[in-house]
Image (cartoon, rainbow, N blue to C red; front, side, top):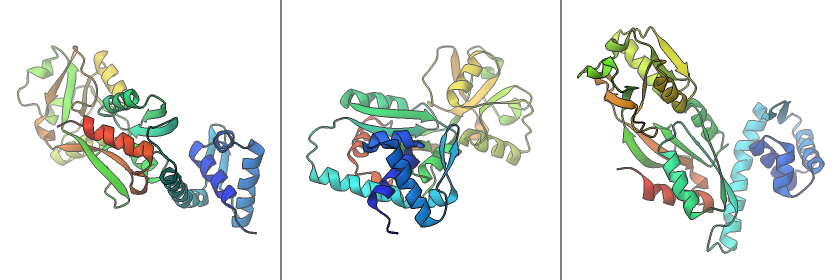
Length: 291
């Protein structure tokens, strides 16, 4: 049985949206048509491509391998279509963005929406590990991530350089220390982002290297929640400087043991960089990057 472009397209849309109904809406066909296309593809391949979960579709190992190829085909088709058509201005479209911290993503998205209000932007925050995985799996158009994995398959644009700092409520005793070390935080409630975050990985690795045991670590699921936890006196926190918007109640303080500089980049699969929505977002990011 020969595989048709419609089967590949139906599979690719369903894999990207994690939904047959959303794939049908994107393709302008019925949901039953999408499921039939995918079923025929599974029949030809002799294996399942999706696991049906309550929260949506999940790719099987075979599905992940196929999607890594089919999404490249979809990207090439988009590039061809955009070369043929005239795009003097961006019309309605969709851009999926993920990041491991609110900044510098939010100011760039705000600038982008001012220029291109008709483009729908989906943005979500995740741990460093999850952002890296979504980028590798081609589940997103753009990632804004600190210290991204190096790969020839990725386009990278540097946006910001920063260090890890301590954040504490204004007037906290720890802010009086001129030379703050990780050892000084050993027995203080210390708020860190979740497992899989770059922050937790770097801080705990440095503590181990120095022979310091951080006895009262409190884990939160994102930078905004770390900030809220510090504001509510759950503890003091460690984050990348300038990773969220300033609050008059909070003060950033350097940590002598964490003086290394890390860089945050805009990252996209190299073959997607010339897609009109991605290219326009790169241009806006370049104009609004720090330093």
